[in-house]
Length: 286
Ligand SMILES: O=C(O)c1cc(=O)[nH]c(=O)n1[C@@H]1O[C@H](COP(=O)(O)O)[C@@H](O)[C@H]1O
Image (cartoon, rainbow, N blue to C red; front, side, top):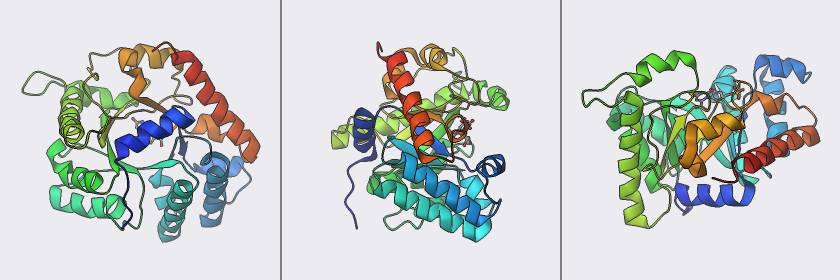
C-alpha cells in the first residue's frame, strides 16, 4: 500500500506550487464534435488523454466528470480509470466528479471504488452528495482519511435549482447548506487536531455563481471547490463577492471555458494558465 500524505496537506502544496485552479475534464458530446472526434469510446479516450497531456503537468487539480465517461458504459469507465491514473502520475491532484451519496453500507462500496487503498477508480478525492444525511457519508470520510484522500461535499451548488433546498432552514434554524459546512468543519477540526495538518479531508462545493450569502466558511479548514467559474457566468468579481475572507481556501473550477480552446494541446494549456493567472491577480489581496 502506498503511504500518502493527508489530502489537505497535498492540496495545500499543489495550490501553492501550481496556483488555485482546477480544470474539469468534461467530454461533452458537443466538445467531441468541436474537436473533430467521434462520439464513442475512442473519441472519449483521445479527448481525455489530450486534456491530461496538456493540463496535468501544469494545473494543481483536474476533475474528470464521471457522467461523461459512464455514458460510454464499461469502455468509458475504463477510460476514466486510465485518465485518473495518468493525471496523478503527471503530478495533478484528481477529483473524480461522481457526486455519489447513499446509505452507509452502500456508501462503503462507493468509498471502496474511489477512495479505498486499492481503489480501481483511485483518485485524490471524490465529490459526494449529502442528501441522505452528512452522517451517511461517514464510510467515505473514513476511507479518505485512512488513505490520504478526500471527499468534496455538495453544500451550495452553482445551479439555480439547488437554491430552495439548500437555503431551507433546518430544525436548528440554520440553512441546510450551513449545516453541511458545519458538519464538514467539525470533521476537519478533529482531523487537524489529530494529525497537525493544516486542512482536513472534507471539502465543500460552493458555486461561484451563488452571489452574496450568509454562508459562514471561516471554520472549514478544508478545500472550497467553486464551480460556475467560466461557462456558467461567474468571474473574478464573483469569487471576491461570494467568498470574501475565505478566498484563500477556494479552488475555482472551470471546464468548458478552457476545453473550448482545444484540441491543440498548447492552446488548451495556454487557456488554463491564463485563467489561473487571472485568478491569482484578481484575488491577490485576500
Ligand atoms: O461538483 C461539481 O464540480 C459541480 C458542482 C456544482 O455545484 N456545479 C457544477 O457545475 N459542478 C460541475 O462542474 C462542472 C462545470 O462545468 P462548466 O460549467 O463547463 O465549467 C460540471 O462537471 C458540473 O457537474
